[in-house]
Structure formats: structure tokens, C-alpha cells
Length: 341
Image (tube, rainbow, N blue to C red; front, side):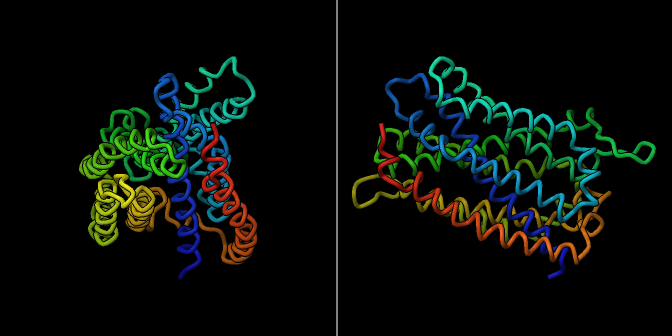
């Protein structure tokens, strides 16, 4: 495999991890806000119990993605920074506000309602804003003035495909978080919260799939190149749909103990579904980073630097992976934490 393709595969893998963990994180904030005032439901407690130790982990993947992008594709950073300054800047401001409020959420009771609302609202806005970056890379929204790239905000904000991407990002975040929180509630032995999140996952799953399909039909004429490439990656998208159907059906299968739905298996199949979809999309996007102005080869660092960076990343993973495993065992698997009041 060429160095540039390996580099973009690593970058896309980190994006996949962030999209999954970020969706669960942001969506959990929204559900925590929705059920925060309902005294007869424990759904908010389950969402906040998950959020408390895990939002920091989500931010690790975001930082890792940015560092990887700049390190492996330094010649693309200038153009991307110029074009994506506003959407990325707004996203960072929202992320900073959310992170700040999350830090102080467990320290004070006085502003607890405000903290919960902030977490919920930013949990909706952040995935919507971040996924709106994708249409910009497909062509038609960037013009060069005196040799400098400019984002055509008027054309962007009037494009249907941008809002379809936003709807897809939002529905995905809510679906993944509801499905994961259903499994989290099941692990904690909270049947009431489990049934609540299972019901949300049942209607959000098909909705997100329908929106994903409709998004393809709203692509602008300038993005016809990637629509044509989608046809060459039908295997990946077909596997994605198949895995979704398996995971979705598992939500209705009765277990021997009487509980309806194999939530853990459903989470596994749905995550694999998004994995196939994201890599198929990434494959269809090649060789461009921003169509038609920037390819991965044009933005790639030199092979010598890449090899040195790759060694550093392998060392970093040897440190991070055990930490993630420990985090899983302490906060997502330990019954003492899961069943706390």
C-alpha cells in the first residue's frame, strides 16, 4: 500500500472512532436534557452516568484526528484551515463551552439545570455542525479569489444537500446514543431506562437509514463524481445495510430471561454497519480531499517523515489502548459503577 493511502486510512479510522464515540457522547447529552426533569424516569441518570467519565475520551479522538491530519497532510492544512475556518471555529467554540460546563457539572448543584441544558443543546448542534463540513469537500462550494480559496457561504447555506447532511448527522447521533444507552441500561439492570432507549432506537434506526439514502439524491451536480464512485463501492454499502438489518432485528428478539432485544449484539452490528459505510464513503472520496482542488497526494508529507510519524503513532497506541481498556472495565463494565444510585 502506498504511504499516502496508508496515511488516509489511518486518518479515516480515527474519524470513524470519533464519529461513533462522539455520536454516543453528544446524543447522551441530549437524552440527559430531555429526561432530566422527568422524576418518573431513570433515563437521565443512565445518560449522565455514561457521560460523566467518557466525554474526555471522546475529545482524545478529536485531538488525535487534528494532529494526524496536520502531521500526515501538512500541505492540505493551509487550504482546509482557510476554507473551514468558520464551521470548524464555531464547532470548537461549542465544544469549549460544552467541555467547560461538563467539568463543573459535578461540582455545583446551583446551575445544574443550566449545565444539563448546555450539554443537551451542544449535543445537538455539534454533530450537525461537524457533519456539514462533508458537503464542502464534494465540489461547487469553493472559489479562488486572487489565488486564495474562499468558501461560498451563500451557495452553501442555500444547498439542500447541506441540510440533509445535517439531518443525517443528527439522526445518527441520536440513534447510536439511544442504542448504546439501551445496552448500558441493560448492563446496569435498569429495565425502565432500557425500554425507553430501546423504543427511541427502534424509530431512529430506520429514520437515519432513510435520510442517508435521500442525502445521495440531493447531491449537487458538482458532486456527480462521488455519486458515480458510490456505484463502485456497492459492496461496502450493501454490507452496511445488511448489518443494520441484523442489528435492528436483534432489538425484537426475546431473550431466555424474558427481556426483549439483544442490545449488546445490536450495538456491535450497528457499529460494524457504520464502519462499512464510512470506509465505503472514504473509498469513493478518493483521490480527493477537496474536489477538485486538492488530492491526497498533493497534501501528503514526504515518505521519510511519514515513516517516522508512523513509528510515533504505534508507540502512542501502545500507551492509549491499555488506557481505553481500563476505562471500559472501570466505567462501562464494572457493576459497582453501573448500579450506583
